[in-house]
Image (tube, rainbow, N blue to C red; front, side):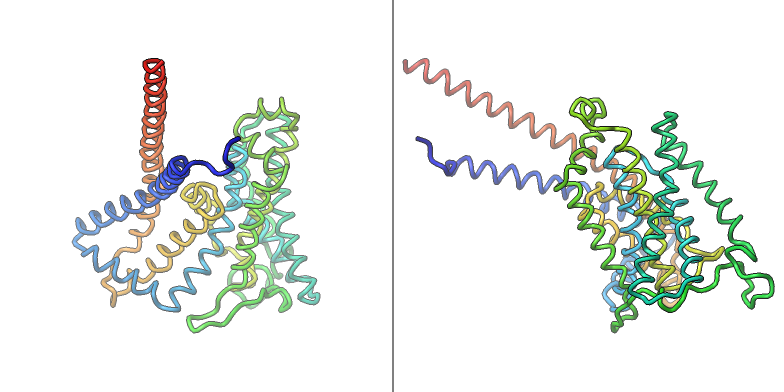
Length: 387
């Protein structure tokens, strides 16, 4: 009769292996950040700037309450963008069209919010649903093209990004989604959303903290739950790893592609809402752009994991928020472009770092297997000799 508890040696080995896995999982992003900081420090030094002064300015601002609020607000938007991209990545679908999906969704949401004024308990959910439906339907076009015509989602979503610019330009004109000529505003934009459309916020010592932070947290929890605790999540991950194996196990791959693209687009629809419902309150030509592509970088850095993307979003938000302080004359007049350089080098270094860590982990695994086989062989030979 065997003991229900494993021997102490085996428990120690299991703990050691789990510890090594954790270390390897953390090593890649840490190595990527260290490499990026080193490269950017060299660039700053070569341009005649003291890199330590730049890091001091950024860290000092991040320790202030207003800097922390700015970082959290930016991280909220970045996390939603990363979740939209990561959901498709988990299905092995490269949804490059997040940029166009959230802009189309923000336009329709802004128009609906400016035309309807219901109680907030009805108005806010209505706008959330509108944004997710608009983004999901626009992304579903790429899904349909892939399922029924075999068009690569990379090509179709890139083309849909370009088409989204035309859609916004076509609808955001006076008399359609924008006020008619004669409005007081000099720029073309929708009417402001109604007061009941304003999402709640929290007043802090450092400024206004967006309530959409809790929506981002809810998205992350739902993301993790669906992927790890539902049949749909299992089918999603199985299809992403091998479509043929998923088909053999009874998964409808076409259906999964359509649903995954629609859900990814639905999440993309939420990206523009923090800015729309908590800051600008209208959609115009100057509405924040580039968030879709930034979300792809955050998702890659976070390895498409809800927790990993949270840290990646905070990192990118830290770089953007604190980087805005660098060009100020009182802080040394550093070039703001260094932030974009750092973000780009982080993404490149992530690829290099994860490959180095993967190779090291594979080597360690081979060494462990070799050691176990050698131990088993030695034990077998010892028994034969004693017999």
